[in-house]
Image 1 (cartoon, rainbow, N blue to C red):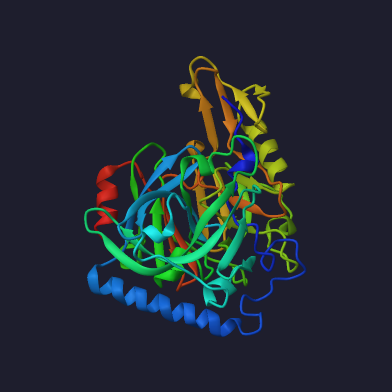
Image 2: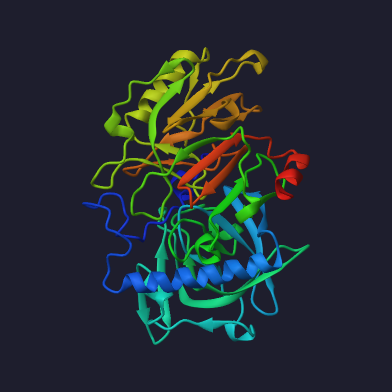
Length: 410
């Protein structure tokens, strides 16, 4: 069992200083002089794109598949369309792809000037005279290039082309550290946070959903009217903060029947921007701040009747007996605002049968906030309701192709 490249599995954005944890407060995204009008222009453009989509089909859907440490979305860019794969990332805004060829070869590409509202919403840019961006992530990976607009085509069987999508045409991208899986397996990032440059914002959609399979089953990223929770789904509100990230209110953690005595200040989002829990499809494993992480490990050691093993790269492992069928692992519960999110053993432990190891897939956070990663989101139907300000979720066998078909055809 090789050690996970832990710090390299973090794809939430790190370049937005106005939203970064650790600042004195959360400045409003409209706080810059004149920025309100720019954001209004972007919203109006998004509404036009949404109307165009509604006139042609019931909703956008994109194929989603697992690769290395994250989930890839397949789509096409330009005229004629060039198919590429991008990492699905709810922890950042920017949509970008490697510029494999000259952008001028596309009939619909246009570079954006520095005076454009799209450029002015970037955290870092320079002018020469086009808008040149620099964007970095939590693992210190980064991309640099030119901000432009293009036609994006969604879907293969019933393709829908959307014009004027702002994106980063990346000329330089660098992984943050050794063995990072991201840029080697994808041609870019599909930012899905709540900022004005994310794909969901530019499409003007009010909802999107996904169901991450734990195997190689291709599932769907759904938008708009197709992204609906079932009546049995639980819901929790997004924390109302001026940040593009999806903060959830984590109020407690239980291991089996034991509620961990975690201080409220450990889990809560503080007024200075520290703490809190972010749900992020671009981070592989969940990260918990201490003492929550330490208490979780202690509770597991006391409740799992197996010898503890030391394995490089993991915080807690157990040695499995030759016949592990009778091993009892307690359910893990995140107590959110108004709902409980349950994690069976398969959602928070990884097993190496050949080595006889059972290892915890939740790690201590190197940041001053906690992150709910995509491994813990597997086999769960998640609906991001931006208009309603809430996350709906329910257990689902995302590898069940009949279920995928039903979800896709809603």
